[in-house]
Length: 161
Ligand SMILES: [Zn+2]
Image (cartoon, rainbow, N blue to C red; front, side):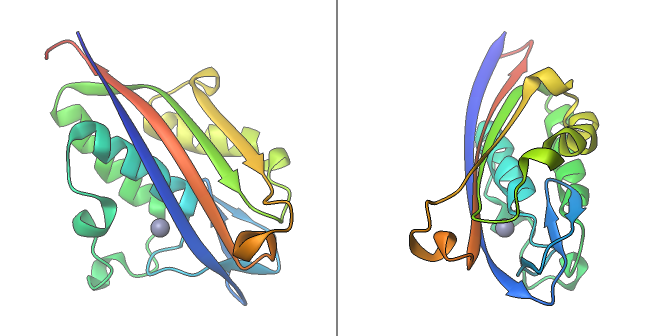
């Protein structure tokens, strides 16, 4: 039995006139995350955590933002592609936990739907996927509503070493 931990972090700027994608959902809000893809910082943090546990390069190297294939792509598609790597190595996700730091919108009410969206992709029941929301107490760029940041940790396990 092998168990590997991975951690991921991501931050995207918020801009008016963009749709907000977070945790695989489109969330009604006055601004959205700027990115080559849909800007879903929560999914990106989860992807980097998984890639870290696999000992692979980070998300920016695997899905480069110069590549037109990834322009405006839904990040859940990138997550599905990373999960293919996990299964190819005969590994699985045991547990994932994430923190989203956003001054607004309030994300707690969206967490059950995010778990329903992300759980099947990660192969996790809702009880093995932790999602938490924090504000930045009005401080800094996140506190002024200019950006949203996410941290994620995952445990990846498999039979072999
Ligand atoms: Zn990102």
